[in-house]
Every structure is written in structure tokens, then in C-alpha cells.
Image (cartoon, rainbow, N blue to C red; front, side, top):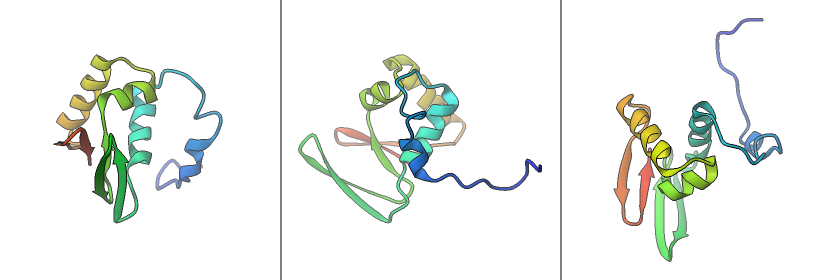
Length: 103
């Protein structure tokens, strides 16, 4: 079996009970989670804290508290992880009101 090439993963995998198990995610799992969170649709919108947030393909609005809860991490590791991803040019973060836009 070759390890080269692509492997398609359906987004519904992230709704599977094994993925949704209450646990502390590894850095790799957190990276996968960010990849599956970003939108594949051109235009998106959602009310967040009473404000309309709009974003495009490859983006998703996040907050540190949202990721802490989602990954079962504390504040500092989330901030350090996002900083590492930014420094490695794997993501960009832009402050947008009460949230941060992840691209």
C-alpha cells in the first residue's frame, strides 16, 4: 500500500462518536479540528453574541474560550498553539470585533 497521494476524509467523520469522545485533544487533533472547521462555502453568516458575523471560504470565526472548551485545553496552551501555527504560516488570525477570524 502506497503512502503517497491524497486521502479524502468526509466532514461527517468529525461527528463520529470516537471523535466526539470527551477528551483532551492532541496538537495534531486540534490542527485537524481547525481544518474541518473552516468553511468550504463561499458565504457564511451566524449570530455571535448578538452580532452578525460573516465569513468566506477557508475561514471560521473563533475565540480562545471556544477552542479551550472544544479541545479541553486551558487558555495558555491554546494561545501558544495558535501562535505556533501562525509563525509556521499554517494559519492567519485577524481580530474582527468580538471574535477572531481564522483563515
